[in-house]
Length: 117
Image 1: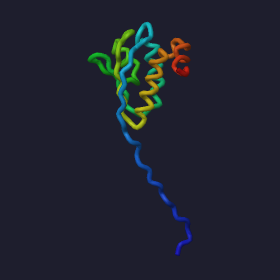
Image 2: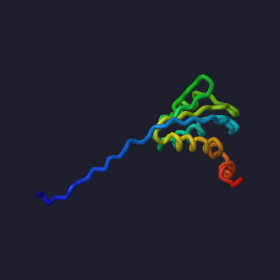
Image 3: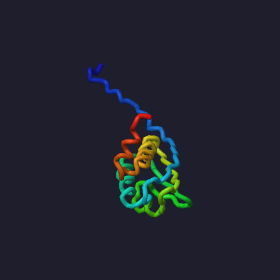
Image 4: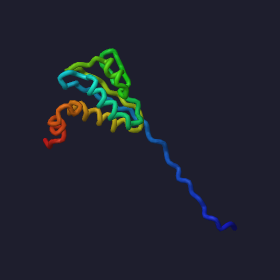
């Protein structure tokens, strides 16, 4: 009998893909402009999910500055966010936070988001 150590390979199941959606209102004064689009794109780069932002009849990759700008979503616009992938829920919660704090354009808005009711 061979006295070598047996190696056990642990089988891991693939991450479960999910689809998450939310509708958000653009509340900052000048809408989704270059700075806010940049904040969105930089923040979403860490997610594997495919994230799409839709406004009216236009849809864009939410990880693309030019795509977001092409939506022309101004103040008061309602945009739909759809994320598909194993980290979709976390990605959508992150976008909800960015919208709630107006993309950090006003830090006091971010503080309000986390304040206890």
